[in-house]
Amino acid sequence: MCETKIILKWDTGEKEVMSEAAWIKIESGAIVVSDILGNIKRLDNCVLEGIDFIKHEAILRKK
Image (tube, rainbow, N blue to C red; front, top):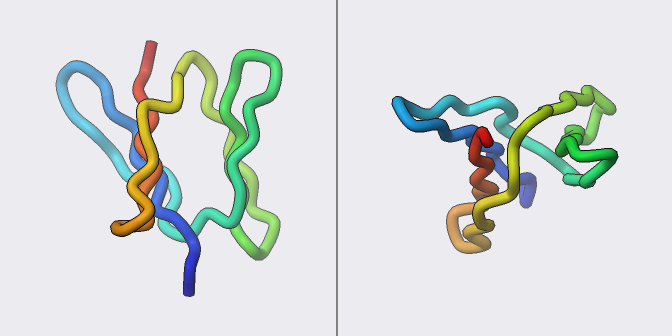
């Protein structure tokens, strides 16, 4: 599969918040991610730090 792992980082650590995201959308100051089954997570107060297309990872950082 070509889905993407969503990783949320902050000053003291990191956490995988979704293992197989199908899309990412920036919406009203939040980042919204969804998997192929329609499970949605809204991540407030974070920014997209980078996307690694080789590893299929999107890195978000808490503000």
